[in-house]
Structure formats: C-alpha cells, structure tokens
Length: 221
Image (cartoon, rainbow, N blue to C red; front, side):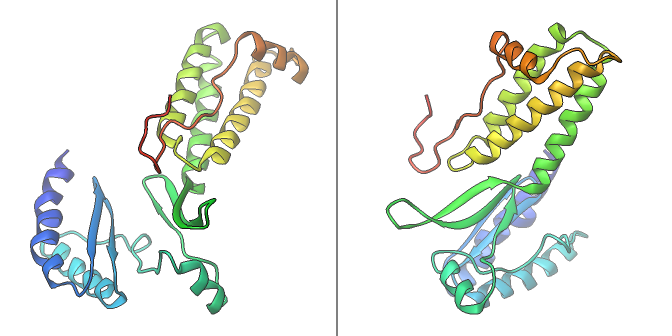
C-alpha cells in the first residue's frame, strides 16, 4: 500500500505530466506495486525513458533493479525482425507471466502469455513444502479440501487465455506430489498409481480451466 502511494507521485504522475508530452511517439506505463513496464513506439524514446527513470528514482533514493531492467524490441514485427537478425524473438516476464509475440488463428499478431518458469518453480516448491508439512499434522481427509482450494486459487490467477498448457502441467505435477505425499504417511507403500486414480475418481481435484478470456474480455462461465 505504501509503495503504491509513494510511486503514484514519484512515477505515475511524473510519467504522465513530464515524460509523455516529451515523447516522439506513443508512450505508456503499466504498473503494479513496484513492478512496471514502459511501452514506447520508438527506440530512442525507450532509452530516453530509461535515463530519465534512473535520474528520477535517484532523486528519491530509489534505483531500478539491475537484472530486471532492460530495453527490448517487442510487437507486431518482432518475430520477423528476430528471424532476419538470426536471434530468438524477445519475451519479457511481468506479474508472474512470460509475455511473447504470437499469431492468432486468423493470422493476426497477438500478445501471448504463459506462466513464467520462475513462478512455476516457486509455486511447485511451495506446494511440495505444504504437502510435506501438512502430511505430518493432519489426515488426508482434513487437508484435501484445502488442496482443492489451492488449485482453484492457482487457476483463478494463472487461468488466462492461451495458458492452458502451463495450467495442465501444474495440475499433473501437483497430482504426482500428492501421490507421493499420501504414500509418505506410511513406511510401507500403501497405494499404487492405479489405486490413486480410483481415489481421484471418488474425490476429484479441480481440473485446469481458463478463468479469464483476455481477447474478448467476456467472463468465462
């Protein structure tokens, strides 16, 4: 909350009142808490914004993250330019997603999204740790409803258009971890994979689903 209030004056208003009027082309800012991206129409504007941001932040004893801050080309012609230059198309991570350039079924440019590798690993480690801890503190019957809620929470955030593959991968990884956790309760293996599948038929876990349609902005029923 404090970072939002602070950056509203340090960044948002300054960006709108100072940087945008000076830009040669279009210039936009998207920010969430202390994470943000700037979009410029021209390359020279991008470097001017980078320089101005460093000066502005230094004035308030802030600095840009050295590993996360970079200028990249991105957009409708990125794939074509990358192919001509012999490199991979640029992507960027923002708010837990990797954003990359793609083509729609009708052949039009579109921005695609998938769960970032870093966030996927973090979420899997968190689930593994939770299963390890809860397995010693409660019975399966007690923690199963919580597991269902955790999966639904994951889908609610990451369930956006085009990200079904990542959702399905997280679901399958979680199922394998749950299978191991249930067998870990006893020194002797108590359930094979076939038995676990039968258990899931009786007590199903929520399967991956797209919760947010970004391309039509229509609610997913």
